[in-house]
Amino acid sequence: MSPFLVFFGLVVLHFSIFVNAGCKSTPGSDGWPTDEQWAVFNETLGGQLIKPTPPGAVCHPDQPTYNSAADWSTFPFHRNDPVSTAANNANNDTCLPDTEYTCSPLGYPAYVVNATTAEHVAAGVIFAGLNNIRLVVKATGHDYLGRNSAPNALSIWTRNLQGITFDDSFQPTNCSSAIVASALTTAAGQTMAELYKASDANNLTIVGGMGEGVGIGGYITGSGHSPLSTSYGMAADNLLELTLATPSGDIITANECQNTDYFYAFRGGGGGTFGVLLTATIKTYPTPAINMITLTVSSYTGPTDDYWSAMTYILTQFPTLSDSYISGYPYLIPTYPVSATASISTYSARFLDHLSGFNDTSKISALFDPIISHITTTWPSLTISNSTTSYPNMYLNFLANYDTSAAGTDKFIGSRLLGADVLSGNTTALNTALRGVSQGAEFGTFLLGGQGVADAQPRGGSDAVNPAWRSALAHVVADLSFAPQNETAKEEASALMDNKVQYLRDLAPDSGAYINEAFINEPSWQTAFWGSNYAQLAQIKKSVDLNDVFWCHPCVGNEGWEEVGDSLCTV
Ligand SMILES: Cc1cc2nc3c(=O)[nH]c(=O)nc-3n(C[C@H](O)[C@H](O)[C@H](O)COP(=O)(O)OP(=O)(O)OC[C@H]3O[C@@H](n4cnc5c(N)ncnc54)[C@H](O)[C@@H]3O)c2cc1C
Ligand SMILES: *[C@@H]1O[C@H](CO)[C@@H](O)[C@H](O)[C@H]1NC(C)=O
Ligand SMILES: *[C@@H]1O[C@H](CO)[C@@H](O)[C@H](O)[C@H]1NC(C)=O
Ligand SMILES: *[C@@H]1O[C@H](CO)[C@@H](O)[C@H](O)[C@H]1NC(C)=O
Ligand SMILES: *[C@@H]1O[C@H](CO)[C@@H](O)[C@H](O)[C@H]1NC(C)=O
Ligand SMILES: *[C@@H]1O[C@H](CO)[C@@H](O)[C@H](O)[C@H]1NC(C)=O
Ligand SMILES: *[C@@H]1O[C@H](CO)[C@@H](O)[C@H](O)[C@H]1NC(C)=O
Ligand SMILES: *[C@@H]1O[C@H](CO)[C@@H](O)[C@H](O)[C@H]1NC(C)=O
Ligand SMILES: *[C@@H]1O[C@H](CO)[C@@H](O)[C@H](O)[C@H]1NC(C)=O
Ligand SMILES: *[C@@H]1O[C@H](CO)[C@@H](O)[C@H](O)[C@H]1NC(C)=O
Image (tube, rainbow, N blue to C red; front, side, top):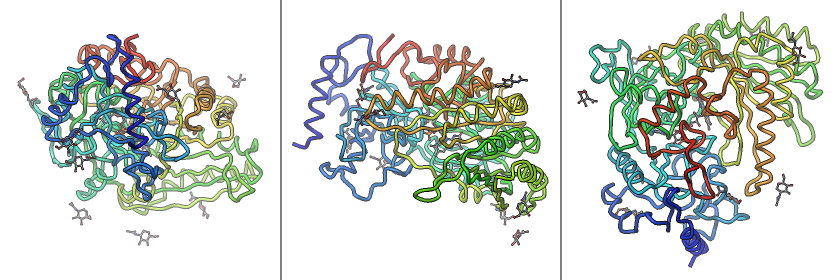
C-alpha cells in the first residue's frame, strides 16, 4: 500500500472523533455522505465528480501521479488542476512539490465538481447544502487569500465553464429598453488572456487586468482593476448582467431590472460568497492603442535618502498623471541584485496612455519630460533611463507586458488604496510610509484609480466596489514569502506584513484596501474591504444564504463561523 493510502486511512480514523453538531460535516462525521451517496451524486453530474489527488504529488517519485515535467512555479499548472492553488498556504502546505516534505491530501477539498454546465454547479450547491458540507469555489486558483480552497470541502471547479459571445446592442433580460453598448458575454471559467484575445478579434477590448491566467469569476466579483480603469472604472462597474447559481441552487439572471440584490453584491462583494457566477455580460470598448513609457531610476549607492525622496516625488505626481488618464505599474525595488555580490536600488515602472492613438507619444513626453528633468537636477546621485513603446491595441500591450510573477510559494499580500489627498499632502509622511512598507523589500505603487473610477456609473445606480476605490489613485501592494510548514515563520511573516501595512493605514486611515490583493489578517477587514457598503452586503448575505452554504475568509457575513483545525464550526 502506498504511503499516500496509509496516510489517508489514518486521516479518516482521525476525523471520526470530531462529531459536532455545530460544525460542517467532515469525512467520518455523522452526516457525511456514504460512498454510495457520492456515487449517486456523481451519476447526477454525468460522471463529473472528482476525488482529487493532491497536486504536489506530481513532484514525489513515490506517488502514482509523479511527473518530472510538472512546473509548480507556473500559474497554468495550478489553473489546470482541479484543486491546486497558486499560493501554497491556501492548502496549509500539506502536499508541497518537494520530497523533503510529506504529501497528504489533508489540506485539499475532499471532492470536486468538474462543472461544465450551470446544472452541474447548481447540483453541487444543492448537494453541499443538503449534506451540511463545506463548499468552496475554485476557478483558476490565483487567489492570494486562499478563498479558493478548504479542507474537507466540496469544491465547485468553474474553469471548464467556457464560451464567449459578442453583442452590438445588449438587451438586459426582462428590462424594457436596451443598453446602447456593445458587450460580450463570457462563461465564468474564461481567463483574462482568452477574453482579450476573443475581444481583439473584433477590434474590441474590456476593462481587464494584467494577469494572463486570472479568471473572470474571482476578478470581477472582487471589483477588478485595469489599465483602462482611469477612463472606464473598475471591471465590476462594467458588468451589465450576470447569471448565477444561488445558495439554494436556483439558476437566475441578475441585472438592474431583476434580482437586483445579487446584481449589487456580485459587483465587488467578493467571490465565493453569494453564489456562483455562471456568465457575465461585460461592456466592451473599441480597442485603444497604448503608448507606454518605461522608466527606470537607479541608485548605485543603495536606498539612500535621495532614492526615497525621488520615490516620494514620483508619487506626488500621480494626481497630475491621473488627470490625463495615465495608468501605471511601478515597482520600488530597494535591493535589486545585479550580480552575486552587488545590488542596486531601483524603480522600474511602466506608465500607459490609452487616449492618444498609435505612435503618438507626445502626451506621455509632455507629462514625463518635466518629471525626468526634476529628478535629474534635484538628485544627481540617481541614474534615469527611459524609453517609449507603442502598441496598436490593448491585446498586443497585454501580450508584451502581462504579469510574469511566479506561482507556488507561501506568501502574504498586503495593500492600501491611496487618494490624491495623501499623495499631494505631507511628503514627509509619505516618505516615511514608503520606507516603512518596504523595509528593504520591493513593492508596487500601481496608478490605477482616478476619474474613471471616481465617476463610474454602474448600472442600477450602485454596486459593491469598495468606496475607497472611488477616491483612490494608487494601489500600493507588498508581498512577503515565508518558509513552509513552520508556524513560527508564518506568524513572523504575518506580524511583519501587518507592520508594513500599518504604515499605510497610518498614512491613509480613512481609506481601505482591495479585497483581491489584500492582507488576509487585515484588522477590521469588513471596513477595510467594503467600507460603508458592508452593512448592505451583510444584509444581502443573510437574506440569500441563511444557512451559510457559502463560507470563506475574509468574506462578507462570515462572522458566525470559525475554522477549528480542519473543520468549520459555528462560533
Ligand atoms: C499574477 C496575478 C495577476 C493579477 N492581476 C490582477 C489585475 O491586473 N487586476 C486585478 O484586479 N486583480 C489581479 N489579480 C488578483 C485577482 O483578481 C485575484 O487573484 C482573483 O481572486 C483571481 O480570481 P480567479 O477566479 O482567477 O481565482 P480563484 O483563486 O480561482 O478564485 C478567487 C476567488 O473568487 C471566487 N470565485 C472564482 N470563480 C467564481 C465564480 N464563478 N463565482 C463565485 N465565486 C468565484 C473563489 O471562490 C475565490 O474566492 C492578479 C492575481 C495574480 C495572481
Ligand atoms: C464519477 O464517474 C466517472 C464516470 O463514471 C468516473 O470516471 C469517476 O471516477 C467518478 N468519480 C468518483 C469520485 O468516483
Ligand atoms: C473535467 O471535465 C472536462 C470535460 O468533461 C474533461 O475534459 C476534463 O478532463 C475533466 N478534468 C478532470 C481533471 O477530470
Ligand atoms: C479590425 O480592424 C482592422 C484594421 O482597421 C480591419 O482591417 C479589420 O477588418 C477589423 N476587424 C473587424 C472584425 O472588425
Ligand atoms: C423574466 O421575468 C419573468 C416574470 O417575472 C420570470 O418568470 C422569468 O424567469 C424572467 N426571465 C429570466 C431569464 O430571468
Ligand atoms: C510607428 O512607429 C514606428 C517606429 O517609429 C514606425 O516604424 C512605424 O512605421 C510607425 N507606424 C505608424 C502607423 O505610424
Ligand atoms: C527619455 O530619454 C531620452 C533620451 O534617451 C530623451 O530624449 C527623452 O526626451 C526622454 N523622455 C521621455 C519622456 O521619453
Ligand atoms: C508631516 O508628517 C510628519 C511625519 O509624519 C509630521 O511630523 C509633521 O507634523 C507633518 N506635517 C504637517 C504639516 O502636518
Ligand atoms: C496547518 O499545519 C500545521 C502543521 O504544519 C498545523 O499545526 C496546523 O494545525 C494546520 N492548520 C490547519 C488549519 O489545519
Ligand atoms: C522556523 O522559522 C523560525 C523563524 O523564522 C526559525 O527560527 C526556525 O529555525 C524555523 N524552523 C525550522 C525547523 O526550520
